[in-house]
Length: 545
Image 1 (tube, rainbow, N blue to C red):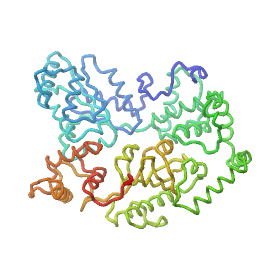
Image 2: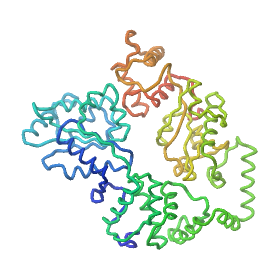
Image 3: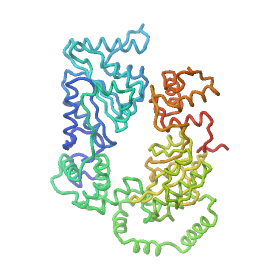
Image 4: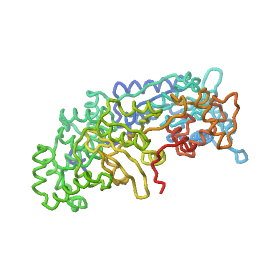
């Protein structure tokens, strides 16, 4: 919509990984050099970075400059079993098994080996690139390592590039994967842009789109950097929304006020200061007509805004709101709507709301935690043989985990608030925030919850850290004995504390059935689901009625 307004030839801030708009900061240039070096020296190449730092865009640029005599297998979805991975690799290279051959791991390896040898004889090379590699299971990573054993006397016949989030580095640091780690010939972690690079990045993309005048004022760029912390994807989202707002307001330059307004839209925090009619939501032209007024109200002092809104609100409406507030205070166990809460909500102390939410969570576990306590909520768990889990996920993850969680909410962009999600029913969820109980659904919270949550869980005896194949630990012995007592699981008593291959097969299948990442690692999420499976007493999220 704003292309003509700014005389643009293309969208400058599309989040699509378009190599034409690639901005090579010093970090990106160095990362690309590492990738090229690794591809010329065999073994593994490792590229990691936080979400949105430009890994995929960098990868697509790499594909453009790889020599034409290189055959590339590109895997975007690595949540695969070993045989599914090998099948996908063969599909990418155009390798087909003969009809009479059964698709087994060995047969896929034999076909791949034959292809790579013939490929090398034809003076061709082969590259396997796996994006989102942090999702690879331990067994799949081990199989990938074995692919590098396909070689001649002086050359590896396949180069492998692993690209993923920083969790991939943690996975590769495990003892059972040390052979793979030793074969990494080049590694690089892609960091976010600096403030100076953020300015250059914005100007670079605008220039690529045909703009030769200043669009973002220095104050706007400073606010963009503060909001996005230099993450290119977030910069794109924020700048795109700001340019749309400038078009709607007929502005040629964007200042920090418009960026602050845009960040509320980008991060899904609705303004509580504007009382738009139903027509304004339904008719796009009405929205455009109201935008200048909204912009004016947004920059006005808070007390004047509230005065204007109060003056325009019917007396009956004010009375109803007051009654709602009194009712919620006098009857805290009664539920009211999420919309009603949002209308009355005011900025409060985020740290205090987190303590209140944890007090409610501890109560579900049968313990009393005073929110004014000087002991942080998660430290308090240590004395109760409980552990605190901080994680990010989706609504499906929360539902699948089936345990009450403390959600981090952004009702006001500048300060998070916290609420206890205590129950899931057929009609939605019940939420406790600041002592109030609310009825909610996923749609209501989609614009306020970005995936961060915390919860409590009960670890097995002596558990300290995630356990993987080859580890020896009393928690392994406890798990095997508990499984044997109720689920017809047999084990060698001499190796009771050893995480062996048999237990790995069980854990990976359990993770698959429970909708968890299939990595064979017994971490907090797996222990939580195992506890439910083994009927260890703990509160659940889903209603039993």
